[in-house]
Amino acid sequence: MCYDKKRVRKVRRDKTTDMDTWNILIVDDEKEITDLLEVYLSSEGYRVFKFYCGQDALDCIEREHIDLAILDVMLPDVDGFTLCRKIREKYFFPVIMLTAKIEETDKINGIMLGADDYITKPFQPLELLARVKGQLRRAKQYNQAAGVTQTGNHPTTSEPGESEAENSGEIYDIRGLEVNVNTHTCSLYGENLEFTPIEFEILRYLCQHLNEAVTSEELFESVWKEKYYDSNNTVFVHISRIREKMHENSRKPKFIKTVWGIGYKLEE
Image 1 (cartoon, helix red, strand yellow):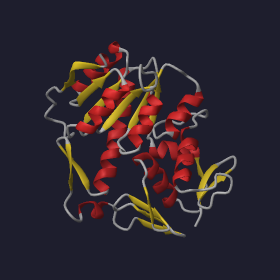
Image 2 (cartoon, rainbow, N blue to C red):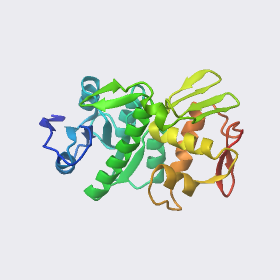
Image 3 (cartoon, rainbow, N blue to C red):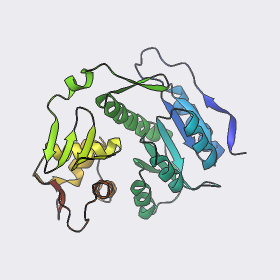
Image 4 (cartoon, helix red, strand yellow):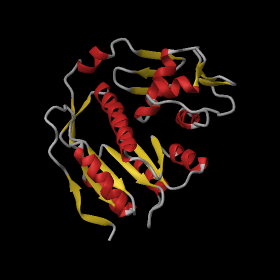
């Protein structure tokens, strides 16, 4: 059996929190891990859906409104990379990958397929919980700016002008690349581009520092709000994915240039 008959669990939230009810999907074939994560996430007021194989998780995504997914790489039927790719064909909620492997290529593969974050087993549950909160915070800001708010389990449109007031004036038009922070939309020569919240925040930061060389460390710490480590390839992989969506030639990009020894620059 690939699922837990009691896979949905929600506990009473602390009344002092203003957090919406977020739906978290956990997919891992190790029951001990899914049970442990369920306890930690439920104690924070999250509604948890847990599965032990990929296909049942995909079926759940079709039925339920999911706000964030935690996917193990090694699953009995569909591996986590394939599951992430299938999710990204239709959905843009944050995805955190779990794996027992430590190879850098696994991390790069996951992010190139659309994962937002990556954590290696064994891990501290509180560390993963902090990652979940960070991803949901960015996703909420992204959705609100785009005119979508979270009410219970279903997205609804916010009041007109609500997000515009927060981000008034943040619209960039750079040689056919239009980045509208008011609505969290982006287009290139009139073609709409679909970015995840993390990808959009990277692009936004580069727009805010137009024609400036920005280090990978600065980008990472500004967008992820975490300490950067020299061996971290996360920024590189996300930049590569952004370029791919912009149909950029990786060797001769027109917009996001690599500044060797420093980082990246969005040129006007």
